[in-house]
Image 1: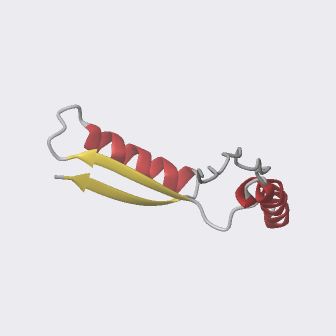
Image 2 (image 1 turned 180 degrees about the vertical axis):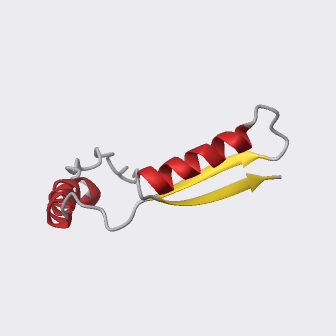
Length: 85
């Protein structure tokens, strides 16, 4: 007498649930829009970062000085200047 062999069955097909991340994107987008709308269009403070390299030979340091004066005196913008060594 022979032993019955199990028959192979195809694996059950499961539907992939949509990723929680994909479902959350429209909600995130809506929330970010609400935050942006509530924030308004006015800035509390403006700042400018001015950077030049110490080894620069194009007078960038002078340009930074000019830009710093323009930002501060004409536009009322706070500035920070960095020299990269």
